[in-house]
Amino acid sequence: MTESATIQKELDVYAIRQQFPILGREVKGKPLVYFDNAATSQKPQSVIDALLNYYTSFNANIHRGIHTLAEEATAAFEQTRDAVKEFIHAGSREEIIFTRGTTESINLVAYTWGRQNIKEGDEVIISCMEHHSNIVPWQMLCEEKKATVKAIPINDNGEIIFEEFEKLLSQKTKFISIVHASNSLGTINPVKKIIETAHKKGIVVLVDGAQSTVHLDINVQEMDCDFFAFSSHKLYGPTGVGVLYGKKKLLEAMPPFQGGGEMIKQVTFEKTTYADLPYKFEAGTPNIADTIALKTALDFINETGKDKIRRHENELLKYATAQLEQIPGLKIIGKAKEKVSVVSFVVDNVHPQDMGILLDNRGIAVRTGHHCTQPLMDRFCIPGTVRASFAMYNTKEEIDELVKGVQRAVKMLS
Ligand code: PLP
Image (cartoon, rainbow, N blue to C red; front, side, top):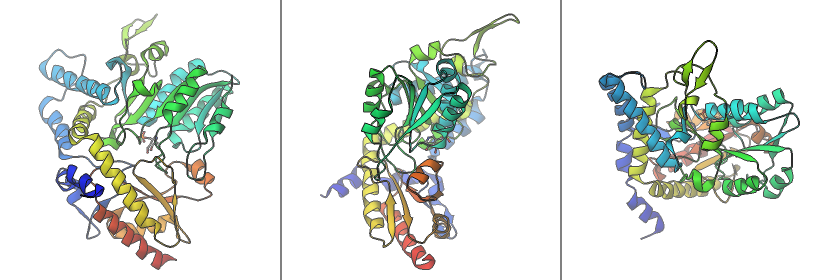
């Protein structure tokens, strides 16, 4: 049996597809081909049911109530914290903080750890391939503190140049915030090596796991990152929920992010004392329903098997890359050795936007534009790319449709 056939056998994609009701719909009279998974993934029926079940069976505010519904809602909410702890192999549940998403998780660190620790003249290092969510919060912080943001350069394959990273490190470097897997290129960065190098110099590191958490095994203790951020909606869970993992010692020393209910021990007009971790960072009523349904999404991934999913997605990535590369005038942007299942490309004399519209006419959803990575597009001297990003439910037949769609679009547009 070929390697490809073995992979197909171990993961029954057609059975998986049955669990995602949206995949049965048509777009513009054609079966939907959903290749915009890096923006947000589709949701299995079990996640949709978890949301419905919460609102129909035990909707209540959490933590404060003593009635049955409040206790059930609190227990379900806190079970997600335990599930997240297991999923990313954190040392303790107190290190798991719920936010609105990766963006808020990064902002939380910039506003709290950043404001407390970054001083005039200090430097924060990011990379050339960061999402705007991992650029702008550091620029805002550095502007306020008269500090500087520096970006690690990348090579033409879209990989970090490690020697250049090392050259950027100095006494002034206080923080590094780096993306684990690039949403525009697919590149998987050597975060463990970056963290090891940084820690030797006492530098604190945040890893943006928005794209990596759905594809790779995440072990924050082994990685030894100080902070790790990700969003539920990119891993088959609902929108509006994210996670910030932080090492307990760092979180304990940080001031709160927002003030309000839930995050306090005692309030008087003279003085307020703050709640213990993780609640110190969770002011106000959280997104209860979606947080509860995140556990269902994690269960779904665990039950399917992350290794099997990864092998299937790698197979799709290899297949799509090989097929697309045969199209004259098409150039793949991002050819790193280690990639998640993202293919970005440009075609001579074809604007990505036009390509996107023509593909949509055939029911194929791709993303076009700068993907919230404008500095990265500048690095490659392009306005944007067409990006196809694959999930566990995608198939080679769908990639064939994409390839045909691109070929037709090229004929029409160039
Ligand atoms: N970082 C990366 C690498 C991303 O791809 C994204 C979203 O696309 C984000 C951060 C921001 O995530 P969210 O919009 O869920 O906060």
